[in-house]
Image 1 (tube, rainbow, N blue to C red):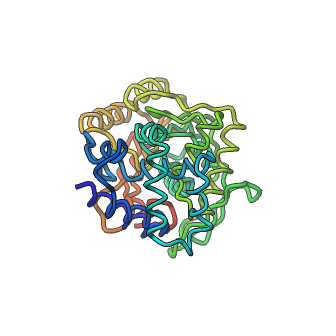
Image 2: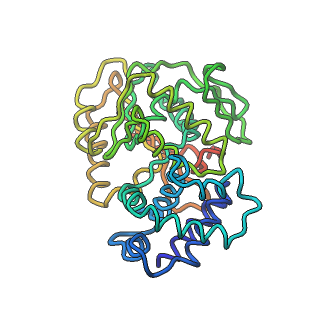
Image 3: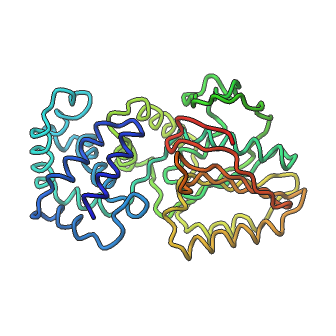
Amino acid sequence: MLAKAFLKQAESCENLGSPFTARLLRLIAEKAPEEGAVWQKIKNWPGDVTATGDAVALRLVSALHGLVLEGRSSKLAALYPPNHDSVLDEDLWCTIDAEISKHTDFVLDRLKRPPQTNVTRRSSAILYGASEAVRQSGINRLSTFEVGASAGLNLHWDQNFYQFGGQTWGDLKSPVKLTPECQTRIEGFPEFEVVSRRGCDLTPLDIRDESEKLRLISYVWPDQLDRLQRVKAAAERFVASGLTVEAEDAVTWLEEVLDAPSDGVLRLVYHTVVAQYFPSEVRRSFEACLQKAGEAATKQTPLAWLSMETDGGIEGALLRLTVWPAGKVIDLARVDFHGRWIKPI
């Protein structure tokens, strides 16, 4: 089961543009020994080891990347990007196994927490969905609420520069510029203002702390330099903003933040690749909370729910928008999990 999960994750990494991470995972799937505290831990994992469960494969490769980023393993760093092309598989595997044995406590600690990727390119989907929410509600002042915000990098999605679907939007001077592939010409983006923004996460990363910032970066695959640059730029912006991500479960938090709507303000709740990690009872409570708040919405206090989640489709995630008081549900697009492309429906 473990080898199968690692190989499936390797295939996903390959498809998402990280052949190096795919290579690591295939080596681990093939060669992971029976002995050693780390190998015993992952082989006897008490929960769901798959990518839609506890994502054990991504926990492990982020731990290895963490050893490199924090300067704990010069031997591993010498084989990591940009030095990896000429490295033999056997040398890479022997180094991985030796460094995991040497840094057992560090790796075991990293395995305790799920990966938090904060894929900044998903902000393109948020802009696309928020624009439709503005059109549907007729209100262009937004209070935004992100569920599963992790380190908060997508809380400032409205401050990026975008170019896709034959349109441009945002500040050209923004350090975060997003240009997803979109072969369909889309309707122009409306003007709107985000008047407040909040986010929650069960275990948020406080990237004002340097070790937490390095942990965040370790979740980015090491051969994706453009992605690393975007994450660093978005992290600097978030730290400068003074915002914090609230450590709270989604249902309790939503019940609180949606309790006091403001006239003339559209409340936008959004999440990207989060719901799959909810236990079934939490997902039911989450949806019931939104439905209850939606039923109380009015034309002057509308509510929009934007989700970018896996739905079993052949490619990418489904971007879906629900807008109250009408309760209208719109399937907007299919979106690459890392935001590389958007395909309007």
